[in-house]
Amino acid sequence: MKAAGIILAIALALALQTTLARFLVRGIVGVDLVLVVVVYVALTTGSVTGLLTGAAAGLMQDVVTRVPSSIIGIGGLAKTIVGFLAGIVGTQFIVVQPLPRFVVFFAATILHALVFMGLYVLLDLRHFGTPVAAVSGQALGNAVVGVVAFQVVELLPGAMERRRAQRTRLRR
Amino acid sequence: MALQDIRQRSGYLFLAVVLAQIILISAQVNSRTGVPVLESVIFGIFAEVQRSASAAVSAVRHVWGSYVGLRHAKTENEELKRQLAAAQIQLQGQRALADRSRTLEQLLHLRDSSTLSTIAAEIIGDAAAPDFRTMTIDKGTNDGVRPDMAVIAPAGVVGRIVVPSSRAAKVQLLIDRNAAAGALIARSRAQGVVVGEGDERLRMEYVSEVADVVNGDLVVTSGIDGIFPKGFVIGRVESVEKAGGMYKRIVLRPAVDFRSLEEVLVVLTPTPAREAEGGTE
Image (cartoon, rainbow over all chains, first blue to last red; front, side, top):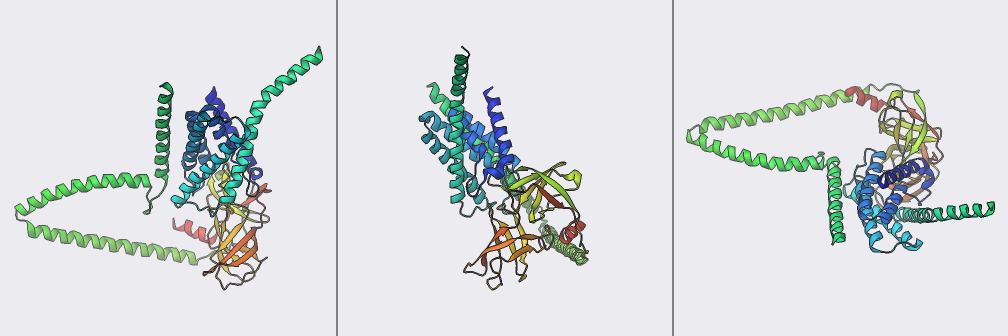
């Protein structure tokens, strides 16, 4: 059941990413929704689910974005490492406040970019120039989306419960 | 104890998943010789086994040959083999030269292709990762779309087809980091190569330091890449700097607004260079 939910979340993130990419990349600020899902799952479920989610999501993203110069597995490897480490952080530290979550999403994006771009540059397949601004922008975008996602998921059931209780009171 | 066990297992699982993906990557990455790294490594190991076996067999044969006193016949045989190998190499060289002459001959018969045949396509998706600048169109091989066909918009060049399926195709945008197109400055005819930057800008490379280029100059395709037809608008020069070396540093603003694209045209007419390539196959 949990696995189905995670697969659904990855598929939804990929679908949203492919349909909203032009709106998700604005100037230097970009959002990688798939990475956000991986870090979210890793923080909430632990390192094993995190690394498996990272591997599956990364490979799916690699396949979907395949162009002649791209390699299937580089995104998968980057997201596996990020998912594993984010899962360890989630189990070893208390990451329930927005600020620590922001830091985890931000750091995870930086790490992902380091592994992803590093491998492409190492294999001499793609060159990224000086991507500091673009990576920082993406880290900021991912962190904001990630923190908001956590807040929505956590606050939504309570808000719905309160609304239901209010309606019941009004009927009486 | 149990927690430690799970932690250890997660470590092993992590290593296994990472290793599997490294193998997957190795299978796709070419070594310097153009062979996939995985294949190269496996072949390298197997070649060593073959070398050892061959050395052992050769040693036995050598001893046996010397023993029966066939030294002269053996030497003569080796000499003949060497001559045959040299002749084969020479033959291959001549064959390659003949192929090249045929290709050049076909290139000289350039056809006049003043009218372009195009097909309109709707954009149905964008890249699934921010590091790649691609989009998906709703026309595929069923509609005559093939790899390396140029994709244009009324404003100018959009990109090229990279992965066509039967009913859709992936387009690599000109702004992708790995995209490039032969280009020239429309006013001064200075030639260069336009490459993507990954963001909303393009870079024009290999334009001579002495070339006449000023801000606002129109940049069009030169047609030398064999993908984009000659004369299509790429963008305008936004800044020109002296790079200090042999070439200028030129930044372009693309003519096409890639964010607002909804429909594009795929050029079905092959460029003269692509037609020549197809003819040789």
